[in-house]
Structures are given as C-alpha cells and as structure tokens.
Image (cartoon, rainbow, N blue to C red; front, side, top):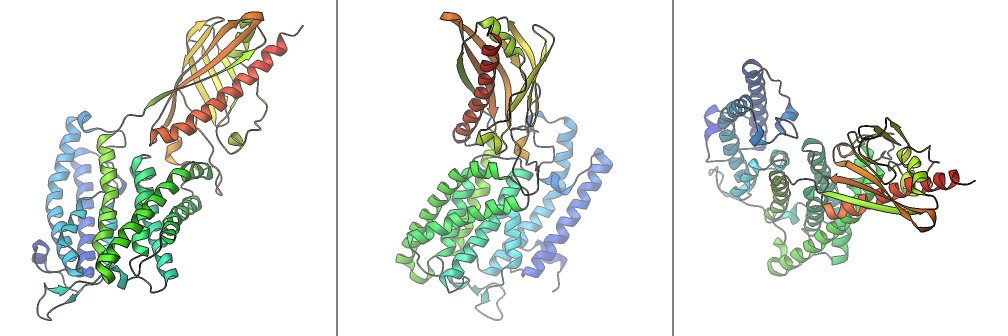
Length: 470
C-alpha cells in the first residue's frame, strides 16, 4: 500500500480502503496538532477533540461572538480548507471504488453521519473491475441482498444489531456531544431506526408486515438495554421515552415494509439498493442540523392545583410559608425516583425573605417577591435541584438532561376565604422544559408537578386543620 502526495489532490481514479483510512487518520492528526498549536500560541486557548463538536461551548451563538473568537474561528476555517479539499477528493475516489453513487460523498459534510460514513468506507471492499487494466470502471454490486445472511433469522439478527449500534452512536452524539434532547432524538431517531431495520431485513427476500414491525421495534429495546448497561440513562427516563419511541419505530417499520414490497414487485432480486439505506442514514443528521440551526426556545408552562381546607386563611398561612417534614411518599412515581418535597423553611419576613423547599434531590431556593398576608405568597426560584434520581444498576448516575433542561422559574400560594371558615388553597408553578416534542413531555411534567403540589397541599391541610382544633 503506497500513498503518493500528488494522489491526495486527484479527483479521478479510485482509493482502496487502506489508503483511505491512512490518509484520513494522518490528515486528522495533522489538523488537530495544527489547531492546538495555533490556538495555544496565537489565541491562548486550549482545544481538545471534543471541542470540534462545540468549539465555544453549548450556549454559544454566532451573533454573540467576540472579535477574538471570530478571528480564532476564521483562522481555523482557513487552515481547514486544504484538508477539506483532500478529504472530499479522497472520499469521492473511495465511493467510486466501492461502486456507490459519487453524490454520496456529500456525506463528508454531514455532522455526526460523516464519522459513521468514514468508518463504513474504511470497511467496505472494492467493487470488481470491468477491465483488469481500467482503474476506474468496475461492476457495481447488485444489491444488499448479497451481503445479508441467507436465513431469515440471520437477516433479522444482523438488521437489529446494526440498527441498534447506529442508534446508540446517534444517541450518544445527540445527548452528550451536542446536548440535544429534541425532535431528532425522540422522533427522527426511532423512526429512522425502524425504517432502516426493516429495509435491511428485507434486502435478501420480501418479508411480511408483521415481521417488519417486530424487527423495527427490537432495535429500540436493544438501545434502551445498552444505554442502561453503560450508565448513560436510568430506568425512569427510558420508560418515559418508550411509548413515543416504540410507536415511531413501528411506523418506520411499516414504511420500510411498504418500500420493500413495492421494490420487490418492480425490481425483484435487486429489491433494496445500498443507496436506499444511505439516504435513510442521511436524513437523521439533516434533521439534527436543522434542529440545531433553529434553536427553539424552551416553552414555558403553568400548573395549578387546589384543595379546600377546614381552617381560616390566617391559620393556613402559617403552614404555607413553612411546613414540617412530610412523611415518606407512598406514590409509585416518587418511589421510582422522581424528586418530591420533604419540608419548607423560611428565613426573614416579607418581600426579600428566603424560602427553602427541601426536595429529595436537593433544595429549591425561593426568594419571596410578594408577601400579602394572609392571601398571596409569590416567590422566584434561583436554584433548582435535579428533577429525579435515576434508577440504574450503577447507583446514582447523572445524564445531561438532569440539569438545565427542566427549570422552575417561580411559584405562588393563593389563599381564598370560603364560607364557614374554610380556605381554598391554590398552588401554582411556572416552569420551562427544553425537551421536545414539548407536548409529549408536558404530559409527564404537568402530571408530576401536580402530584408534587398535592403532596404539599394535603400536608398543609392536615397541619392547618390539626392546629385549628381546640
């Protein structure tokens, strides 16, 4: 295996997988060392491999860059141009070498997918040539059916394993590298995994709709098991995500069955082409890129709960501003790890006083904004604890979504005097949740906050009614 420097700039011809891997590995190493040297010497910044996903951090926005940051990124981009040229030229030659359409080389620019694409190109063998003396012409493979196991069980196993591995890699990239818990993760990924699995499963022979549906669901189950096994996620969040993920994966499997059925009717033995699966894989990074570019603001919601108490407002007020420790929860949702309130303490009196509501995962710090005794207590929230303790074989794990995604902004207690010395006590929470699709996750968050409200309101009711007894 020989590499000539002049070959790196050529668009014509082919590149073997060994040459392609070596050129890519050496090129990435040189580019990384060059970026480290430029960043350290001229801009006094340290750069690591993970920084290529987010050079300026997860919260940076292009319109808020400083002059120094703009200069730094401009220099890195200019020095990257020759590497981009070489990388794209080598990718075109490698794609041509394995018999795929040359336009697939555009995956070189697709975030996330380009890494998987590089690994695939490094593994696939060269296609057969039409002429022993012609370095360009060759006979492309007839279809994926020739690469899949002959048995239906073998095809199913390969489809599930490959789809699950791609799903795990995409999940890790979206959540840990990009910090994204949105449409791409919870909608696009399960749909495309189901579609991909069904198409791959039916590459050798036509499959029934029920079998395609079953095969489309299995990768989602496997992904959940793997995420739990490697301590990336806990049981609670996986169970919450399961309904929407399984439904969309099943829909993707049904779409895969429709596609394969049509192609088998028209093309017979060449049912599923390699280009079909490449197009499917391309859709996910496109979805992630669009979602990242749009950068949706986290929607804000309000949850209100109420209870009637057999005690006057003045009596209830004393239990609202601070209450004693609540007995351990009996509700399954709290015993499964969702954060629940334990007690509340207050320091000071009137606006500016600091109320601390202790939860099972830590305290909410709540500076008082409105003190209208005994009618209204309104407070902001300056500190939020984790919304839950994940259940995992590894104990207390900390996936990224536990911090900064679900945020409580303010809350209040409203006391309304009722006839007969009774009081209606209303608890309200304003919060935002940066996990999409918003309407699906709001079903969970609204229910959880309502259960938290009722745990507090019912405890205040017991304390107020007990203290009002003669």
